[in-house]
Amino acid sequence: MTNEVLPKQPTYYEEVQRKGYSRRDFVRFVSMMTAFIGLEQSAIGQVTTALETKPRLPVIWLHFQECTCCSESFIRSSHPIVADILLDKISLDYTETLMAASGFQAEEALHNTMTKYKGQYILCVEGSVPLAADGVYCMIGGKTSLQILEEAAEGAAAVIAWGSCASNGCVQSAKPNPTKATPIHKIIKNKPIIKVPGCPPIGEVMAGVIVHYLTFGRIPELDKLGRPKAFYSKRVHDTCYRRPFYDAGLFVESFDDANAKKGYCLYKVGCKGPSTYNACGVMKWNNGTSFPIQSGHPCIGCSEENFWDNGRFYERGSSFAGFGIEADADTFGKVALGITGAALVGHAVATNIGKSKFIKEHQQEGRESEHELKS
Amino acid sequence: MANKYLHIHRLRRVYVWELPVRFYHWLNAGVILVLIITGFFISNPLALMSNAEATNQYTMGWVRYIHFIAAYLFFFNFLFRIYWGFVGNKYANWRQFIPVSKRFFKEMWTVFKIDILMLKKNGQQQDHLSVGHNAMAGFIYFLTFIVFLIQCLTGFGLYASMSDWWLPKMFAWFPAMLGGDIVTRQIHHWAMWFFILFAVVHVYLVFYHDYVEGRGEISSMGGGWKFIEEDVFEKNKHMTPNPEKNK
Ligand code: HEM
Ligand code: HEM
Ligand code: SF4
Ligand code: SF4
Picture (cartoon, each protein chain N blue to C red):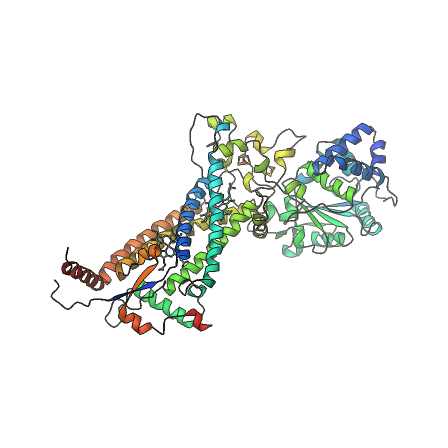
């Protein structure tokens, strides 16, 4: 890889050919992507034309507080063209993990892209930005990640927040969040931001977001939380193949029971599928091999904000702060109910004592009337 | 027994709860009961055993279906009650619920002294018998309505993604604001406990008032009538808290 940025970029198709892929491979890739981004079959032509004619998109990919699982997921996405063409070989002008350049050269490449393609490049961010202690928790080349992010976002056409770290903070922002890990949308306010949450997000989803941008030259339609609707409008639960067991009321009670063997629904062992918006049930992972639920593990809600603090992985409810690890809302409720019951009994006793004269008068009045009436 | 002086009350009938309020009340109570039962089931389904094929079972599906039907009834009933707070009689008026005046707070304090602290006033164990619900009760109902709202916002917010209708879809912003469905669901679950505690205390207090005051409190939600002493009626004739007059 070179740190020199070409002013005139080859198109994607040219690169595909140069890499030795056949036209058939290319078309297969296009139809797969078209399906993934939720377009109709008739749009295949549009996507093909875009990839054939549009020069490659300059991409800057920043890494902050993260574990690189997003990059890992991306380069393992099922079609080799994704890794080869979209990411690895031509698309990236700067990415700490995958570029060959280092040190001064790398910084120069970043700078070049930022100036030459001002207003055109896509800024991909992996990881959250630590704001505590003036940002010393994550610094590259003598700059804090906040500085780097703000500089790079300045000339970006759009920002993609890869993964849960960049979208919502992920585990490093778990209470008490010592580094004040902050997601991108809380820092960059004046650019369109596409959130692609997940720990990591599915590789095909990541590719799909980029292909969508390429084809239409604008960001995909986003939901209220800023995620592309094509991938995040359905809950894992809605596309889960175990759903019929859920509807039937057939549940795994513990991981070693007969129901687990039969493949029943994992709801009662803590599955967060009913509250998690992701495409796992449809796209699955590792070339569509499987996904967590298919291998018998409940969904932990990895693409949902605050999933790390919002409850236990193997229970439905979250623990209730201050009442011990095992206590949940129902424990609290039962205690409150008990106290309320006791208070009401106390009140009933107090009433009969404190208001005895009053009650007696009523009774006497009533009795009197009874006596005076003919039967 | 009856040889000492007995004050025989003459009671006067007051139409307190109009039919729409009573209808609302019992529909509301019934539907909340259904929502609590189905809600518990949804949050922790029973390990029901059956030898039927999974294809022929729909237990969770039915329970959720009932929860959602009850939820719609609950929601529209609630909207209706709000509407009735503007067009109904003075005891149903919204001003009975929201502490806007000094008088409201004073009455709440009086109720607290009589019903909770059981203080005596002028040697008497009871005075101030409100005709509609008392100020304290009104305020509690106000809080209850806020929880109704929370339950509708969280419930329909969760339901939004399962529905194609615009009405539930209108609530999608709420889970988005809270930061996702997981936490929304938990709040929905916690709020259920408010309903349980409210229902227990409420039913107790209704029986308490009926027992202590002897004016037909329980049956007032049946026929709509409550009874007040003739002398109280005379005393309050022109001073009855009349929200329409304050306008
Ligand atoms: C008195 C009112 C209500 C009570 C007590 C109640 C109670 C509950 C409870 C305890 C749950 C289980 C939560 C968990 O997973 O732990 C639940 C789920 C749910 N409730 Fe309610 N609820 C009420 C009203 C509503 C309303 C008005 C709606 C509006 C549509 C609603 C919609 C839902 C939905 C969508 C779920 C999730 C069901 C699923 O995903 O399977 N609820 N409710
Ligand atoms: C045996 C059961 C019940 C009886 C006898 C009963 C009776 C009554 C009575 C007499 C009132 C008039 C209020 C007052 O004078 O302070 C009232 C009001 C009310 N009750 Fe109940 N109730 C019952 C159950 C419930 C339940 C289960 C709920 C809901 C959780 C409920 C919710 C309400 C509400 C919200 C009001 C305010 C009514 C309004 O003005 O809109 N009740 N109830
Ligand atoms: S395993 Fe999880 S996602 Fe699948 S049906 Fe059961 S609760 Fe839903
Ligand atoms: S199944 Fe749930 S926890 Fe697993 S990857 Fe998908 S969204 Fe994340």
